Amino acid sequence: MLTTILYISLAVITLSMLGVLYRVIKGPTAPDRIIALDALGISLISIIAIFSALLRTSAFLEVILLFGILAFLGTVAFSKYLEKGVIIQRDRNE
Image 1 (tube, rainbow, N blue to C red):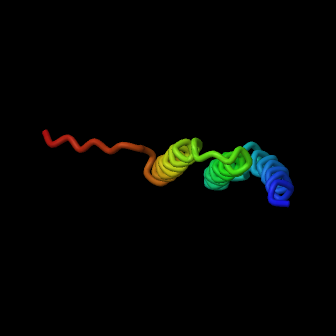
Image 2 (image 1 turned 60 degrees about the horizontal axis):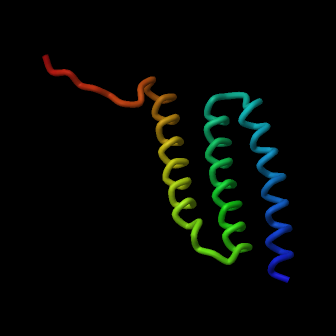
């Protein structure tokens, strides 16, 4: 029963990823694309978690953590770039 629910949720998340991928490509504005990329990262994390549950292993937990950190940093970097035009500010006192 649990295995069937996991496979169904895997299919639903995969279909939602297709919709999010459409928003990444056709997004009307750059912030829409950034939010869609963040949603794509969250969907990827959930797919890895479902595979981990299906395989009954905890070996993928580090991968989930890594993807979560990278998705967060990517979203913050893109947002800062849109807001200020630069990602890393360098103040030179000369």
